Image (cartoon, rainbow, N blue to C red; front, side):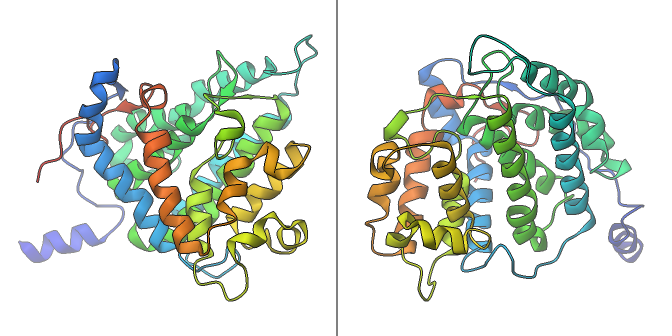
Length: 321
């Protein structure tokens, strides 16, 4: 019996159905006092565990290094390529306001309609019931269609989307590097294109005092990539020449490049927090500091977490020890 079970479990097509009741995720953090529930939740533990596992997985590695690319990874990249193509098919409209181009709503409506089908292309047939639950995180990860804004809460939804795919076994431990370097990096490219094309507003931006108007995770994982680098130190990322020569290898420098393309004036003025970080002596200290800052500035802030949704894969129930 055990032998036949093992054989069935080893094969992709006849994998036994997961005994799980999937559900449509919903908001649970409605008032500030609910934040304690979030910090104790299984969702918080799993989400943070996922971020930190990937942080270790990419430590000291270049974007251009060799790593395994599984079929689900390829399918996720194809999904993101579809979103990219839809941007090309949905040009910005003429409107009086410079920011928040309303064509984004047309683009978003298409995703809203197609998300479950897109997710179904990534997950095997025996997990089809998970598609509606997982698709919610994909829809939440591209910005808000009413306000036409994007921020770290949307980025967190994409990380939650990937975390859910890990929890149902679509993505595996040996996909770690590809999750960050291939999938998340492609996601960033598509988000930057959305932000530029539709002139999206930063959601809940702290302006000059925030780390970045739109992203946070690539700074965490990107600083991990640079730990123990033989020549690049934190002080180098404010040097334009260094950024231009190395951005294709390091996510952190890719982020810096995008900021300098989007903003004018002295770096110390438009990105004061990052300027301060360039004075930190080592990348491991930068990495540790950014993880602490992410928890404090994103995951422990009610305006960000009130939008997070909880289901069977990322449950609001407290951690069971």
